Length: 204
Ligand code: GAR
Image (tube, rainbow, N blue to C red):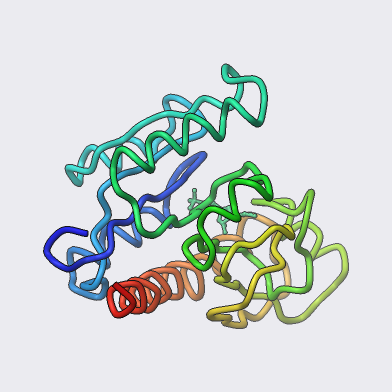
């Protein structure tokens, strides 16, 4: 840990609006117990990597397609995490599920943001826009977002924060996704990052 801050890696796969919320929160002092030092993308060329570069944060790719097996993919991520002395891993729109072996190396050191009120619309197959499509198909009146610790069960770890968001008449999956991001994800994820970073510092 440098300067008594938890060293944070953010894992992404796409646009990275949650990554942006984290970078902005660090700039604004909402995250002050941790420092984002590394961004790892499972896909090359995604906009999240540009966001990292703009903020002066090291960006790396662990190419899920090219690395073919889960083992090789996770090995690459582990190497990057170890090289950079990472204390806390934040999954922010990271679209791969990590193995039990990987997760067991970082107990209470990996957090994830999920765009529903867990245990609704979560687990394997529920990611990104698909979650909002399922919520609209089911006709729920309330949805939201959850930040939780990652354990060996997909979306099954201890819940850190949740916030409800109303579904409105005429919502499309895209409109609902945006509202859930703005009113829940981008607020909860930085708060959880600060909370867990603080706990990590205390324990060291
Ligand atoms: C976010 O809504 C995030 O909660 C979701 O993907 C989106 C990524 O957007 N993650 C999952 O569904 C994980 N199961 P972003 O790249 O703009 O942050």
